[in-house]
Image 1 (cartoon, each protein chain N blue to C red):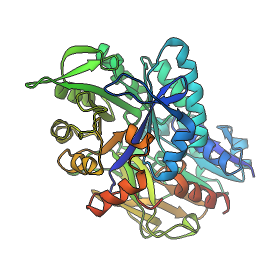
Image 2: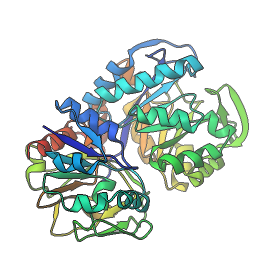
Image 3: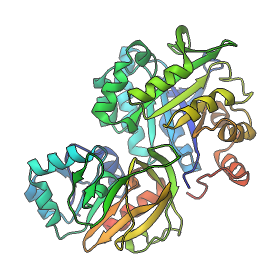
Length: 253
Length: 193
């Protein structure tokens, strides 16, 4: 049986991992490659590296980082942050990334999803969506959550799939960093409507939160950052707990 | 050891190269027939679409070259599918090393089959030193049916050939180069054939 995936996310600034609360207040959490290797040894199913600097100067640094990660780590990893062209993606995939994640650039120009899927295959195109709950509607935000848009989250997720996205990385801004659980209802709504995997992100605080998002939330994978970085929940304990509760998990490495 | 990775328009050769480097081997990536023929072992990776990949191989006569090779040969992912007789992906005639058909997953679950899944009924030197039910990482929408050449099975929507073997030809559907210690062991076993 296909297992559910546990994905630590490493937010990268100048080659080091950082983690903020609700997208701001960054706090240093260590060397990215070293951290990634430790997670891989502990049983992480995949890794996500998000470059939150994403300035022009940082682009080259990111390609170097990807090269180093690929040399050291033998599980799949996704890279995101400021990716806006076929050339960007080509450089990152050639450096050894397995998947790339696009967010603001796809909202700005949705055809980018089609172009990347055609050129590199859907399997490596992750569309990341930052969403905020406005009571009646869930709306997409861009630029690290700073810019609201007029786009409804569920509709955008569906459009991304139809344009060739291979996965959706759904981050609830309301839940991110506050550790009160994932946005399971919205995740379930999107995951059940789509035929591509949905990675739930934002809000992990306890092991039970993961259980909820894999059951009530119908998520295919769950992503978290600080609970892993600050060793609040060790990955092996989390996976054993979930397996014990009947969630298919890769526990033997 | 002289390991050649076949260069064509499909495949993530960077990951395979990195894993081989970790095993102390520096592979050559090439589409030159003489280089491929002289290799001790050949690896045929692949991520992509079947008909485009077959056209590319035919245009360079690599299709004929591959079926005539005598040294240990390992196809990975699309590589395994191309080694079968036919793929439903754009109705493509493939290399025919294995007399099997490649079909599209049809069912209630999401396609592609993406993530870690268990192997079972594994047999032969490729899986030496591994537990009966080891996990490897898969990303694919098409699968090879079961047959007498199946040396490992996996199950998603239906059972399928997770690995195949005939004579010097080996193939694996998942990505050993992305499957942690288990995958590295499979590649190490291939290098030791």
